[in-house]
Image (cartoon, rainbow, N blue to C red):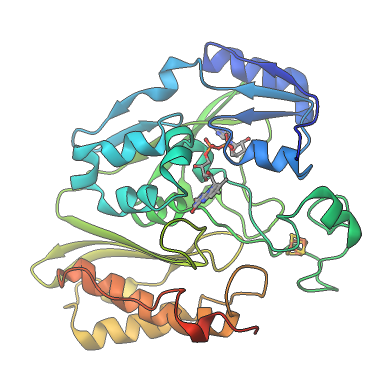
Length: 340
Ligand SMILES: Cc1cc2nc3c(=O)[nH]c(=O)nc-3n(C[C@H](O)[C@H](O)[C@H](O)COP(=O)(O)OP(=O)(O)OC[C@H]3O[C@@H](n4cnc5c(N)ncnc54)[C@H](O)[C@@H]3O)c2cc1C
Ligand code: SF4
C-alpha cells in the first residue's frame, strides 16, 4: 500500500488568508482542491510539499454565474459543472470535457481549478517511488535524464487535462490571486510548453476563477481519444469553438490537447469569413494535425496517435458545422495498441 508522507495541513477560510499562508510558507507549500491529482502524486513522492493548503473551506471559490458570460469559481467540482444545465447549453465543449474526466467519484471531488493546474504526465514519471528509483528517476523529479528523449534539455511530459483545451477554445480567462494582488490573463497565457514548468503561474498564486465570454452565436465541441471509454486520461483531444452565421464562420478557435506539454491553439484564421465546406474542413484538419507531434510517453501507439489527429480535427469541425455527433477512431482498435 502506498502511504502519504507526513505533511502539515491548513484550511484557510478566505482567499486572502490562503495567499498569506502560501507567501509565508514559500515553495515548500502546495495548494490542494479535490486532491485527486495531488494526493496520488504525493503517495508516489512525485510531489512532496511540507505544507498543504486546502481550499475546501473558502466559500467564494465555489461561486458561479452563468448568465450571458460565465464566471466559475475554481473550487466548483466537475460534477457541479456537468450538472449545470445552463452551462451545458452555453458551453457544450466544457461540459463534455468535464464529463470525460476520470470517474463519477473523482469528478465529485475534482475541481475545475485542479483540472486546469493538473500535473503533466509521462510513462516514466507516473510510477511508484521504487519504480522511478530503479531507473535513477528522471529530469522532472529527482533525476537528470529524460528517458523519453535522452540528451534533451527539457522535459516532454504531457498536458493531460480535459478541461484545458476546451477552455482555450472557448476563449476563457483565469484570475490568479496572491499576497501581491490579483491579475486576470487569457488561459492561453497560463500554459507553457515545458513538462516541468507547465504553468506560467507564480508559485505563490492561486487560481481563483475562470471567466468565459458570452456564448451567443457560438457552437463548441470536445472530442477525446483514450484507451478505455469508461475512464482514462486523454492521449489526444480536440476542442473547437466557432461563431457561425449559417454555414459561414465568423470566428473560430481550434485546440489540440494531450499532444505536448501544453494545449496548442491551431491556426484557424483562414476560416474567418469562409464557408465551412468539406474542402475547408479538410484543409484545416491537414494543417492542424501537424501540431500533433506526440512522443512515446503516453498510452497507445504513437504513430497511430499522430495519424488519427486529422480524423479528430475533421470530426470536431463537422460537429460545429452542425453535422451531429461524428464517429472517430477509438483506442480499442487493434492497430493502435501495438508497440511503436
Ligand atoms: C484514476 C484517475 C483518472 C483520472 N482521469 C483524468 C482524466 O481523464 N482527465 C483529466 O483531466 N484528469 C484526470 N484525472 C486527474 C484529476 O482527477 C482531475 O484532473 C481533477 O480535476 C483534478 O482536480 P483536483 O481538484 O482534484 O486537483 P488537486 O489534486 O487538488 O490539484 C491538482 C493540482 O492543481 C493545483 N491546484 C488545485 N487547485 C488549484 C488552484 N485553485 N490554484 C492553484 N493551484 C491549484 C494543486 O496544487 C495540484 O498541483 C484522473 C485522476 C485519477 C486518479
Ligand atoms: S518527458 Fe522525460 S523528463 Fe519528462 S517526465 Fe518523461 S522521462 Fe521524465
